[in-house]
Length: 316
Image (tube, rainbow, N blue to C red):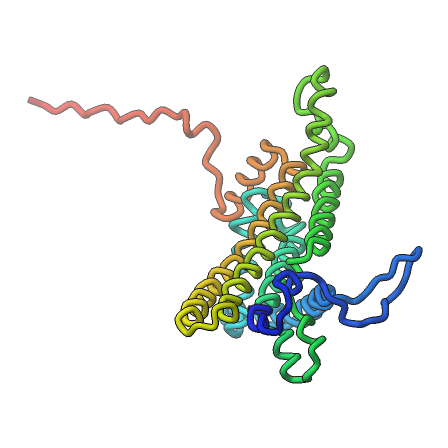
């Protein structure tokens, strides 16, 4: 509801989702290209700082204080909330796909999810209108916004995911990783290799566009709905717009979590596709089961024949 509250200013709808300069002077210049601090870049910096502050505090609450059972209980509802999300991502999202590689790369998975989630949630807050009201500066109205509603930000996330996906694949499989670009026989390589290369480029592109489109669409619909108040200037329309905006804000809150989950889930699947082989995944799943339950069934037990003892003869 960041920009929908201020449509009475007469600005067009798109101006509330486009990037705006926070500082008039560029931060630096490279090759004649000027780089400015925009509201979306500012939001990503705020999210990065918030994560650097929040998660060390959460980790301190999760860390055991001693050896007793009570010392292993996470302290505080705030830390328990984040711990439950992290545990869900680890056990329900990453482990089924990555298997034994889960704990090796779970840090990247957690970081991706929470960075996108925080950007989405921060974009829902009316930062700009509050700053304008507090400072009286009309320029401060555009200092907020959803960073994930900027195609450059989502493209940056997708590029990072692209290099991580292929980097992990090369790290885990070496030069053999490139063999998966030709999953068929050698004579099919002229057809399959170009298709696989295109597919590897389409995957991050889909991640980028999906996140960007969903976040921008939600803000535009919400802004248009609230804009009806200033168009018709009718109490009935105003009541309907406010109720609709409230319901849509709840939906947008759900979408903020959903899009962070989808981006993270698909990234995990893309990593697993190149780094984990099916037979290795099955072997390590069996190994994890042994570690969890502490025993193996004896070899060949499933083929054993259970013989009943002979019936004792009874005398007449």
